[in-house]
Image (cartoon, rainbow, N blue to C red; front, side, top):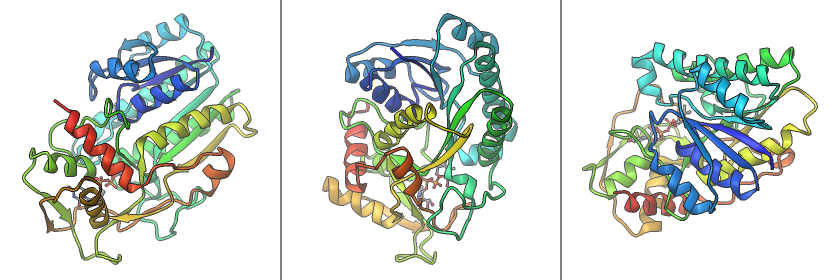
Amino acid sequence: MKKILVTGGLGFIGSHTVVELQAEGYEVVVIDNLNNSRKEVKISIEEISGKTFELKVADVTNSIALNELFEEHKFEGVIHFAAHKAVGESVENPVSYYQNNLSGLVSLLGAMEKQGVSNLIFSSSCTVYGATTDLPVTEKTVIQKAESPYGTTKILGEEIINDYAKHKDFKSILLRYFNPVGAHPSAKIGELPLGVPNNLVPYITQTAAGIRKQLTVFGDDYNTIDGTCIRDYIHVVDLAKAHVKALAYCNEMKQPVDVFNVGTGKGNTVLEVIHAFEHSNNIKLAYTVGARRGGDVEQIFADTTKVNELLGWHAHYDIADMMKHAWAWQQNLK
Ligand code: UFG
């Protein structure tokens, strides 16, 4: 059985990916520092898949722990999720972002090199395209200087992998995620934001649950159909499946590194997301329109031709499913 190491495998995208890997017959080992995740997620994953996996509670920046893990197991490949991901926090505390996201990646490459593990799937982000006007964005759209230290860690992460792969027998796929939302249809796993959510969908579900008084729509004077920002929301289960496809593709790839956008190809405004939530769940949401949020781009959505054609991956869930599953998960949270 092919064995895969998943870093950050108890996090939002990581946990859904472990489920999909197990469903495809992979044996999974997870390394997670529980910094932004809970240990109980392991049990929930195992309930969904009916299969167990090994969890090492350690930080990916800890080279000793990583090397031990690579000596204990013969990995076919690695999927690297473990990273800090809050844009605003990265502006407040850039050093922690560079320390964690970049030295984590470098430690991982070091351990992979030592043990001759040559397949890596890397979590990148559409944030690398910045405020582009070249829409929909293809993988050839020019990368812009990042708006936040978080974004810089994604651009630099991609560069580090490109440099490394030039001189080694190595294959890597960089997946540029658009906006991952929703939860597993079983409502057993989903997003677990710490404190007040920064992102739209957890803020919506917490408002509907009465945890937050009301949602603020950040600006309605953008040049879009209803004045609110457009994003390409992608169901986390679809995104998880793209990782499994990417792993298989690693073995067929001719060049050392390839990059794929992972979105639905369809943009939705903030108001459309709110109305989809209300409609799918038959709930009236308390919201108000406020000022623009600093650093927001007006609109971004993916051209998914490359991921559709080369990975044979297509998004299955629509915005109504994403809202239904996100709400079912919120209701399941204690
Ligand atoms: N929004 C609101 N109210 C809220 C929260 C968000 O109106 O309370 C709006 C934002 O202004 C934006 C949209 O909802 O227009 C989506 O915002 P999110 O914070 O959910 O997502 P972002 O598009 O800002 O960020 C996401 C990822 C980042 C990544 C970025 C790349 O969370 O990790 O996409 O564009 F860097």
